[in-house]
Amino acid sequence: MTSKADILRQLRNEILTLELKPGSILSETALSERFEISRTPLRDVLKQLAHEGYIDVYPKRGNLVSYIDLESVEQIIYLRSTLEKDMIKNLASHTSPLPLRGVLELKEILERQEKAIREEHAHEAFLQLDDAFHKALFALAGRVFLWDLIQQSNAHYARYRRLHLLKKEKLKEILAEHRSILDSVIGRNAERVNEIVEHHLHEDINTAYLLENFAEYLNLPSFDSSEPADRT
Amino acid sequence: MTSKADILRQLRNEILTLELKPGSILSETALSERFEISRTPLRDVLKQLAHEGYIDVYPKRGNLVSYIDLESVEQIIYLRSTLEKDMIKNLASHTSPLPLRGVLELKEILERQEKAIREEHAHEAFLQLDDAFHKALFALAGRVFLWDLIQQSNAHYARYRRLHLLKKEKLKEILAEHRSILDSVIGRNAERVNEIVEHHLHEDINTAYLLENFAEYLNLPSFDSSEPADRT
DNA sequence: CCGACAAGTCTTGTATACAAGAACAGCTAT
DNA sequence: ATAGCTGTTCTTGTATACAAGACTTGTCGG
Image (cartoon, rainbow over all chains, first blue to last red; front, top):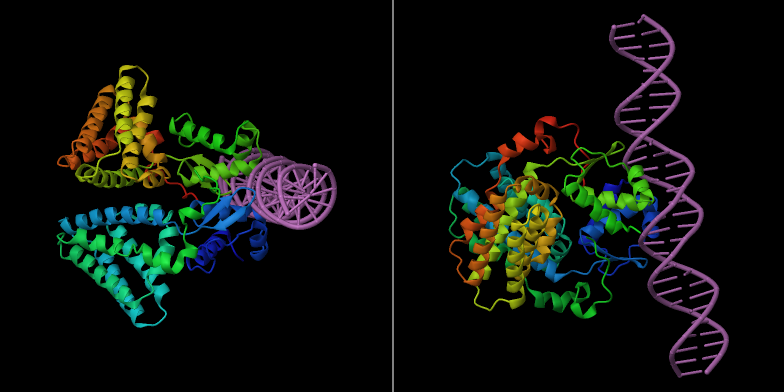
């Protein structure tokens, strides 16, 4: 039994992990056979994927896994950076006590991240914990609504990040920055928040590295071949 | 001929203007007869409306025009406030020259807003110009992507604002604040941006007024009757 | 009078047949 | 050789019949 939600999760995951590479064709009939379901509910899933930017729909031609769009990535980084700086500063400067649950959750995530670094081949786990850490921050600030909103446009940023975080040093750096952020919140010290968060989110816009190694996955303006359908 | 995009715009508009009141039923068969189109493309439209928060889908029971959710409104106001403060400060403190087109566009919008205030029954025009002003600001900052993202969750905020902006004095205040914002950008003066933007977006969270006059349109926690389907 | 059950009638959800545009191959005519 | 048809075969888009859950109504039995 595979429900629509399961299929959605499955396809999302395959695209995020690059199991389904940018440019791959997602044919409705092929997918309907694979998941043993009719085209109607499957089209709902594809609509959702298109909405989240995972695929581009070319009417009457086909659905392609989208190429990673660095413009979208930059926009999301700016959005998150601006929001998280503000949220963390608010948390750090607020006088009311922090909810214990949230703080404990953040600490536990950091412990699990540390453990994930020690193990080999734990990138995927580390990435999920990274998401969990930031989501927990949003939760602590009462902004899960905005976290969910951002997730709706996360297809490009999430894949971008996976291509970046392949070196172990990078992981250690991220963990250290998470510690700094949590210290700022707990210690009620908002002083260095700006630079920490900016570095944490911005630093690895390393376009050259991506162009060098993963050009085949990127949406390069030179390649544009008749825009996909507008999804507004 | 009414395409899917037309139907979507039409229904969105009817919900925003409260022509379709919160709680109204949008039956697929009824709508398919009204627009003389089959249920399949119509369901696509309803999916989109649900995604944007215009309607709540109760599986196998029906689609209801959503009640205005003040929680969503507050979240969007916080998001926009935080983003616009940052964007405007950046624009005001940047040294590179501003694109003339964008500045002229903003000025023209202000003139048209002034004109709209003088005319009676021009609330709808004023509101659209208000959106146009803020969108132009996002454009000037190179952040139309984020404007569009925010619009995807705008159903509650947009209706909330319509219920608020019924007094002419309020309109004049908004226009004056728009002038201040534009002056900050052009005059490269970022000093008072924070308070101006915060007041501009936050000030009219006047929940009491809404509860008093439009309780029937609001999503009040007391009324909750079996949550609608999750749209993730 | 009232509760329980069951038939009927709403609703949306799914499967499937058909329509119609897009791409391609292969032919023909120039 | 090549431009231009034209039929074939992909694709997604639409209409419609049917499935199945939820609610209403009425009837029957206590």
